[in-house]
Amino acid sequence: MKPIMNIMEKIKSAFMDFSIRRKMLSIFMAFMLFYIGISIIIYIQIINNETVSQVKQRSHETTELIRKNIDTLIGSANNVSKILTTNSLVRTYLHTQDPGLALTKSVNEFLTSIHITSPNIDSIYVYDFHGSSLKTTKFLTVSTVEDVRLAPWFNELKTLNGGYKISINADNTLKTTSGKNLVSVMRILNDLDSITPIGVLVLNISEDSVFDIVKETTKSGSSTFILLDKNNSPVIKDDPGYPVYLKYSRDMKGSESIETVNNQKSYIYTLGLEDIGWRIISFSSLSFTSPEIKTLNVVYMVFIVVTLLLFILAALFTSGLITAPIQKLIKSMQGVANGVFKRVSYNTGNDEIGELKNNYNLMIMHINDLIIRLVDEEKQKRRFELDVLNEQIKPHFLYNTLDNIAFLALQNNNNTLYEAVNALGSYCRISLSKGSETISLADEIRLIRNYLALQKLRYGDMINDEYKVEDNTLNIKILKNILQPLVENSIYHGIRPSGEPGLITVSASLAAGYLFLSVQDNGLGMDEDEINSISDENLARNQSSFGLRGTIQRLKIHYGTNDIYKVESKKYEGTKIILKIPVEVGSHE
Image 1: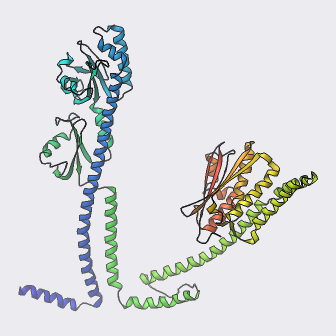
Image 2 (image 1 turned 90 degrees about the vertical axis):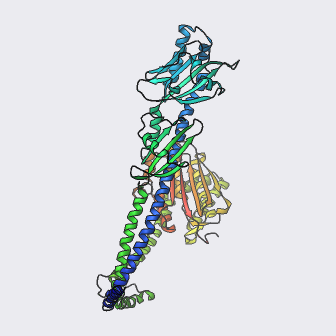
């Protein structure tokens, strides 16, 4: 005991002789090693539990999928057997003691047609009670049954009352030249009138079909699956997993167990197929590492490395070497409170303080750039507003409108003349809106009505319009003049090129904090290339779509989001443009 105390005393004495920096480093290192050790233990436990959970879940899901696929395979064969059971040719053949060549040929052709259209069926056997049978097979199959009523499974089939029985190789009464197993679906064929047996139908599914199900389901996994019939024999002959199952099945308790298989811990899970008495056994290695866990391991290692670095940095720099530079930096930053965004210019080293200074200077640069960009965006927004306004009130639009008004005046059609002048005046008044940037949706809809009223003076019945506007949207404030360019697009790119009268539908609704506005026409429509030309990526380069381009740019700048519009169109079926506008607090009148 005394030697140990002496050693501890020497360590303490040496520690007290360390410099403060070394003392801090030693303390931090001790805490760091303790922290990392505890975290590794906890992490390993969590990963082990997560691995077992993932392997269990994957095993259960895959086994259940195999079960469903096998049920589907058996069900498909059962459906084929029902078709054969109710076929008049088959029933006539079974009733006839000497069916003759013609009837036999017809039945054979029918069986062959069913066989060809059922890829999973390996062979079909029809036994009558006169010592004869018909069959169609893909591969050579030999039946040892001479009199079906003496077959070992016949009496059991009679007790099923028309139901089917599943067995391997028809209870060993069928053999294949390939040596592979057959999954036999057998049922009694009864007379429809007397409900008495007149024959037996045996449909055989090759083990290859079953093996393909297992292989396809598990091709990306790390599990071994064994399929056993009710006699505990492998459905797939020479299954490589069967000896493994025999070795460990005796130690299994219940439907799941964790055993050491081939020097690896494995999760063993059993799922029964109750309808046919089969079982699916899965062996899943617990050493399997999923991509998620691999990623988690990498993240954890990065976390440990970062933690180690942080501990070392904290031990090295927690001293007066930090305090003084921080005070200098704070003094330089005080100008920000007075609105002076000036960079820090004093010299520092390449440590955390220097990094903080550089990041601060970078932030100041970004703030200055942001201020400049906001000013430019505001100018650009105003320029787009003017461009859009000019685009809306084009000279030819005014000339045509004034020509129509003059024509109406010559005809003394005073009411129509009044409506035209009133519509033009209302359109211009709402468009200008006393210089306001936003207007209510109700005013925007009135603007569209006036615009279309003026267009109808020129195009007459070529243009029809309808409005599906929810009442709770009418008072919402929106950026002005955003629907007219879309309506104009519908006229000049949708309805007029089609040469047929068209309908323009303007809709508005509220959902999930957004106002959805849409303009839809049933005109010419667009193909994929045309839609792509006005997509978000290509719209800026599309010089032929200025009205839409300017409107979308204004919306993006005003609402601060790129997710602002969507185009739906099919060639010769029309086009729909949807605007998704955030409903801002206080945006209702």
